Structures are given as structure tokens and as C-alpha cells.
Length: 156
Image (cartoon, rainbow, N blue to C red; front, side):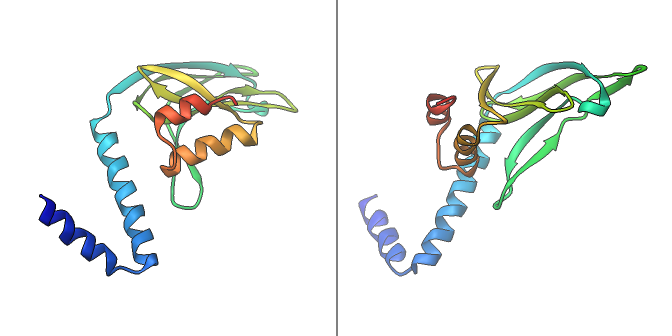
């Protein structure tokens, strides 16, 4: 095994800094992919009602696309009333997924928070109004923080 490690180190020494950085990103992506495949999946209930003019409730998985955070919306049912909409249903998420939940809004505020799936629960890690909390989640999505580090830094 030691000979193999020496050979691999010699090969790494031949790479440029840019090639090493690209390799590091590829390795991070592969580790994340394998963890996601192995992660346990949980089912969550969703049911929130609001005036649609003030913000329709939703749940979405947040992902890092290489440049910014993007939302992957869960397919939830909408039932409309006279001046309200009820968004309801179930969605599945895996351990470590970041979920954005909008419970509604008012004329001046948007009620959204970010949660991480941990041990089958949604643990709040960021309020949408806190740039500091959102930055911690962004670092996690980029792969710069582990789940444990995210949980320890959440809300600070």
C-alpha cells in the first residue's frame, strides 16, 4: 500500500495548481454524491395556508449549482379558497438536505426559513433575513462545512 501512495503522490506533484483545484472540486462532488446515495430518506407533511397575493407557501430543496443556490420545488397540491390558498401534501428528503419552507407572507414580509434534515427531523439553520446564517448554509452546500459543523454554527 505504501508504494501505491508514493506513486499517487508523484502523480499529484506533476499537476498544476489549477488542475489540483479542479481535482479537489471533482472529489468533493463525488463524495457528496456518494453520501447522498447512502443517506436515509424521510417523508415530511406540508400544510400551510395564506393569501396568495401575499406569498404562496412552498417547500423546496436547496442545491448549489456551482455559482449560486437554486431551488428544486416539491410537487405539492394547491387548493384555492375565496381569498386564500392551502398548499398541502408530502415530500421526501434525505439526511443532510437543505429545505427552504415558506409558510406565507404579509404585505411587508416573506416568512421563509432554511432547515437541514437531521435524524428524520427538520432543524432550522437559517432565517431568510439573516445574511450571516445564510452564508453558513451556503458554505455547507458548497461542501466547505460538514453537517456537524453546520449544526454547530447554525443560528450564531
